[in-house]
Image (cartoon, rainbow, N blue to C red):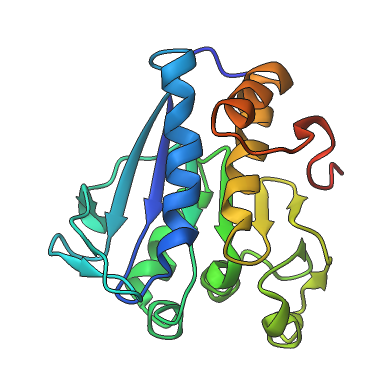
Length: 200
């Protein structure tokens, strides 16, 4: 379990699905209300300008890819904009670079395709949004139909709302079941954190 502050970077891009990144942002930040200075969560984008998400939310990222330190955890959301983002050489390079040192590289929904394009999912167990299962399998992925799937340091999660489960899964792995369960209770999300996800 981590004893120092955990640094978490959440990648965003134009037409990202809002709940894909806001869900994990909320959960991974909320822990600080219970145990101060547990995490620091930053939003990252290819460039520093304002990002317009899929449903119209406008977000100003904290950092551009070129300004980023090495994070302990990277979270990659999905959404319609992933079709462009997954083809970005800069984003693929960023994900590959962070994967060398991060404790976890995680995705929500179709964010899995950014990990796949970066070469991180080949031969791995993973999940994504249900309608995109066949597409993900085309990357030589062992598809698992579960809310949260872990294979080594790679943690993928299913559809849009599963970002909440992903956040709680990461809290459990980083800080233990009791603290993760307390966060779940505080945000009034009924889930057994101890049994969440596959644990290879």
